[in-house]
Amino acid sequence: MTFSDAFRFIEEGTNNLSIRHANRIQNKRMWKSLRKHILTRREKCKQAEANAEVLRKVKYLEQQKIQENKLSLAQINGRLSELRDKRDELEEEKQALLNQANASNNNVSSSPEVEAKCEQFDSNILATNNIIRSTVSDAISVRQQQIILSNNTQSYVIPPTINNLSTLERNSVVVRNIFNGE
Image (cartoon, rainbow, N blue to C red; front, side, top):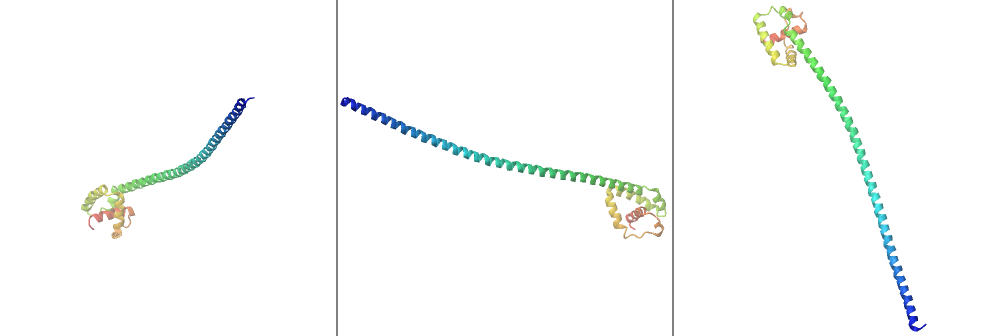
């Protein structure tokens, strides 16, 4: 081997060594980069899982609140329907009482028995009473008439000839006397 051949051999060896060293460094960098990429992806996956878990918990809590609201809304609707039913029953009862009061008032005002028993009163009073009675029943409700009767009966003294009449007939007599100014 000559000097130039030896130099060439050494040069090739060092080139191969430097190429191998460069390849090794390049491989090391590539592995570091790959490792860093893998670790970053793992961190991102862990963070995404944590975020997904938080979202699941939030959705679960929202669903629970919605269910509670549905239950309370159902309870409110049930109570509301109960109150509506009760109101309807009370309105029917009120209407029945008003009809009964109107019927009894009509019976009293058109009863021939009462007028027959009261013939001792002046005929002018009876004529005036008929006009007043029809006007009062049109203008004043039954409830107001009952209030007027209950307020005025206490101050009125019943004549002894009328004591044998029923309370309903006495009230009709009282109404006649009150409107005539007695």
